[in-house]
Amino acid sequence: MASTKDQTCNATDSLKKGNSDFLTPVHPAKRSRLSAATPARNSPANTIQIPASPFMKKLGWGTGVSVYLLERSPKPDGSGRSPWAVKKVRSKYKKDRGLVDVEGRLKKEAVILKKMDHPNIVEFRALSKSADGSLCLSMENGQQSLMDMIEKRNDMGKGPFPAVQIYRVALSLASALSYLHNDLKYLHGDLKSGNVLVKGDFETVKLCDFGVALKLRDDLNGLENPTDDYIGSQPWNAMEVHIGGEITHKTDMFSYGLVIWEMMSLEAPHLDLLYTGDDSEYDDDETSFDESEFEAALGTRPPLPKENLGPEFQSLIELFCACTDEDPAKRPSAKMALSALEDVKL
Image 1 (cartoon, rainbow, N blue to C red):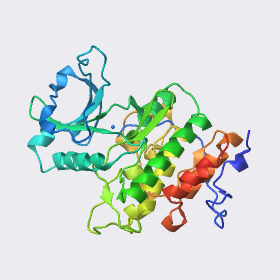
Image 2: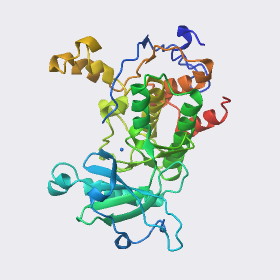
Image 3: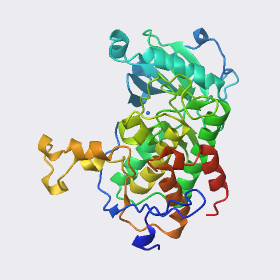
Image 4: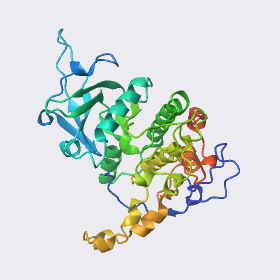
């Protein structure tokens, strides 16, 4: 096993040359809940019939939407059809458009998904209306989110995911982001474990949820429309988001590094700082929470878990450290991360 000294962000490999003076402290990994998501690709929306919500199994939810599993009827020859995941606008958001333009996000996501063709990005199926008139985006079903898997592993008292599983996620997401950034010139804008779908024993890993994606400039070093708002999810947002700096493709890479960290720590970034007591003192009292410490940590690199990680984790630790540098210029691009991972031998 590697020593405690090894479990720091030395990042001495090619991803981080010249920046090995930043050492991340270690602390016990505190428990935290991770809560905060076939026709042709261009089939007409009005050909798809989506039943009312009570007739579908609920898979999860997000801002203004619920996600359901749609079991489809067999083909005429009796063979089965793969199920779909259906993202449906919740009724209270449909009635109060002042909260968030959820329908607008869903339509935007459908437009983006139709453009995509990548094995590590969830596939578009249809944009349609349900029986109650709610707008629905149908996609291939990804079985389970990485966030749910992390929470279950934490509940079971297990340690970090095996290095080979983290590697599969890191490689798949790097490939998806390289395609998204370089081929389509889009920033995902909300990368986190909740937006990563996993099938089986990490046989397939796919990126999903493009409702807040933003168009990048051709050089990737800024947004095509500088007035666009970056939304994201606060614990996963890079420093430039918090201080109003320039948003680039490297903003996704900070969040990408934190997904690697989530699989090692089984926590969401910095949420442990909200709770200042120990388990024996926990009483749901508001005084147990300190938002100032949490807010001060946003956009910074969280410490690695106390548990020593074996040498098989070293390349993943180095990648995590490189991606979570507060200076975007020192972070690798998705293309660089992909190239580095392809050279890793586990």
